[in-house]
Amino acid sequence: MKAEMALIDGERYLILENYAKALELFRVAKEINPTDAAIHFKIAEVLYQNKVYHEAIASAERAIELDPTNKFYYLLAADIHVARADMLSAQKAYEELVKQPGNEDYLMDLAFIYQYQGKDKNALEVIGRAQDHFGTNESFVREKQKILLKQGNIEQVILEWERLVREEPTEEAHVFVLVDLLITHGRMAQAEGYLREIQNSGASNRAGLMLAEILKKQGKNAEAVQAARGSLLSQEIPFELKGGILNDLLKSTDESGKPSLLKLVQEVAAVHAREYTAQAFAGDVCFQLNDKEAALNYYLKATRILPDNFSVWQNILSLEAELNRYDSLQLHAERAIEYFPNQAPLYYFGGTAHLRKKNYSRAVQLLEMGKRYAQEDRLRSVFNGQLGDAYNGLKNYPKSDQAYDEALALDANNEHVLNNYSYFLTLRKEKLEKALQLSSRLLTLKPDNGTYLDTHGWVLFGLGKYKEAVKPLQRAAEIKNDAATLEHYGDALFKLGETDAAVVQWEKAAEKKNASPLILKKIADRKYYE
Image (cartoon, rainbow, N blue to C red):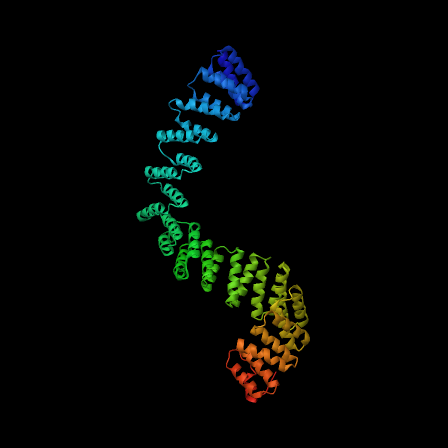
């Protein structure tokens, strides 16, 4: 009774984590009843908690000696051995434990101990015993796979998964693991067989995506698209699983197959009409396939779902600028700025749109704000170039010239500035020698550009160097063949006394769009008017 009371009191102190008092009481109990296995077990437990492993293992082994049927004694002994990094002794404890009927739950613990020691053969044998007792399940197969792959025994790994598929035929996930394994190791025919079986049964939409992957790797892009179609149009499969296969198909499909692929992408986007990623992806695909109108529409749909993605807004503004949609460019640039007020490109697009619509004051506001956020010299040069145009539109010529000069100080080869600055100076009949320097530098950069040839010729015309002006203007007229260039060429010819030739050029200009209001008067009077 004294031993029993000491054991009970010791257990109470153990629960309260008063290990010293608990150990004292357990040892009192041992002195009274030294052959009680439970007392030795409790002493071992306290010593283990206090990391006194040498004494703890002695007590644990004494408990096993007194009662070799209690599984908890073996488990404690194994834990103490592991704590001492004595894996061989821990192995022996588990081996003794699993010899006893009813302790099969600990087979996998023994297998892990074997694996830790690199005893893969023993580990496989023990996992096999667990399978025989409990039946095959995924955890057993995965543990075997770790060992078998390390050994390079892919054949056995495949056999294990095939066995699992047979024993659990309703678990679709097992088939996909097996298929991934087959694909990874080049067993395309086997993988394709499993996937076609699933696809034909209609059990899973995912099978079509995986089958498409296989067909794509074999260069069968048309078949891949067909195989994936049902899966891609299924609402049950998230778009995240579809984007990868669509992107891969896009990269590998030749020009003849891209229209049908584009149609498929648009159908998928319709299935996921409320998903930002799907709409943005469709926009990217349309852009890559040069369907800019469709790309713009998808990007706009994406912003209606999730309006705070900078790259999509940038794509929208770039496309609208390219398509000369300046009304919508104004609107969307201002909206994008609400979400990203410190992004210089948005101010550039907004300012440029207002500049094109001749809203010069608002253009100046946006461009001046955006210039503050521009970090690179080249970008600041671009902003200053647009500001030069905007201030010129406001007839604030000092500020226009200042902006142009700042632009060239940052980038001496800014073609836009070299062209516009020299042209506007010529129109104003100011600083014509400077205008000539600018237009001459422009031609050294792009000697065959029709617009630049026209500008250079017009600067020479403004300086009264008509003979020199004719050559670049003639070349510009041949390249551009537009109303303004033809008219300039005619003007230069007139100044050289070649009236008939001048009228011929003016008549050609009159037939073009955007001919000047004075062109008919020039023709009728056979005379040059400014």
